[in-house]
Length: 161
Ligand SMILES: C[S@@+](CC[C@H](N)C(=O)[O-])C[C@H]1O[C@@H](n2cnc3c(N)ncnc32)[C@H](O)[C@@H]1O
Image 1 (cartoon, rainbow, N blue to C red):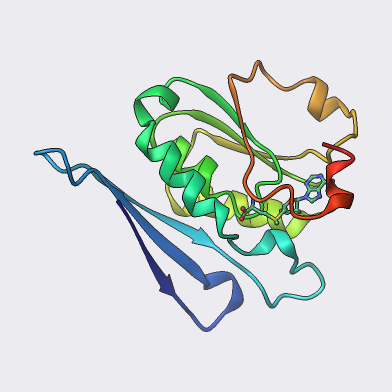
Image 2 (spheres, rainbow, N blue to C red):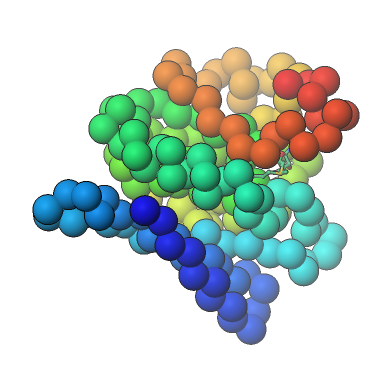
């Protein structure tokens, strides 16, 4: 089960959405609440990757439902934007790398700040632009699982993937 609450604050980087994931079926109800920063207004920089797209909560819910499988995994999220699915995976115990394009520093910054906001030490953030072979890409540790939500949103984006 997932609940979403919008917390709007006055300053743009204090805008976050709160998501609560819970196991209502279990007797000792287990739940986590995740805060994800968004920034739709800061220019230049606000972009597709600075707010949460509709697939992200769905993928995050899938990750939560499979927390026993992801717990020990090394996970890379590509085109992470604000990073909700990866942050949920990290909250479940995975080692997570959140990535977005090298040209999107605001997304990368939001990912870093959301990881911090959720008290996560097992999240790193880096720039990975699809189709570009860089030292960051070639020096990634072995990855068990790649997460991607709403990355097929435009035909131009598909080429590099
Ligand atoms: C539609 S948004 C989805 C964001 C996030 N995954 C979500 O579901 O909320 C697409 C994401 O892909 C990223 N992206 C687009 N082209 C990219 C590229 N060539 N390399 C890396 N990331 C890219 C964008 O910066 C953006 O964060």
